Length: 216
Image 1 (cartoon, rainbow, N blue to C red):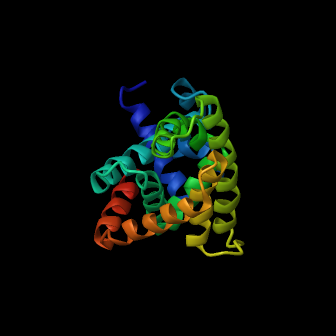
Image 2 (image 1 turned 90 degrees about the vertical axis):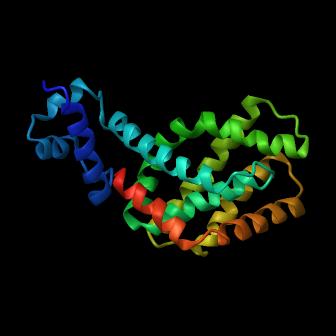
């Protein structure tokens, strides 16, 4: 097999996942686009989820690189601001948002993000003096992921009873509530995250979206 075949497979999958969605794309579809037999893909990737993980990893790294440059302050508002901007960027492009929803449903996001999520949760535990173990934070993350999955799916299906912004408020509030942070403090964090994100020019958001499209 040629040395660059693996990259050809990834590139084809990126395009098909972006255009058709993860669940509407089979390994056979990817193989047809590269003009190979689908069994050749299994030489590099044991299944479609493994291929999806590579592509989500590229999306995650791309968005993280840009957001970290825009959000240098690592205070107690940082994580909520980062995540709100993350969702805003994803929501900007319907195909990327749908693909993100597919990756959540497949468990790809949870598996990839968990280590970083636990590290980021320490912004909250340090800020509020919370004594929570990694196991407790892991349980909080998985419970919060369930809320995210439910509401992101509703948005993708255009069935959400509340606005996109309110959905994000709920997603951002969930881990704080589970940690036992005071509700008034949670409201301040949510409000400040909105203010911080609104200060970022749309041109910057568009630049990140363009970079994500290049990564899909």
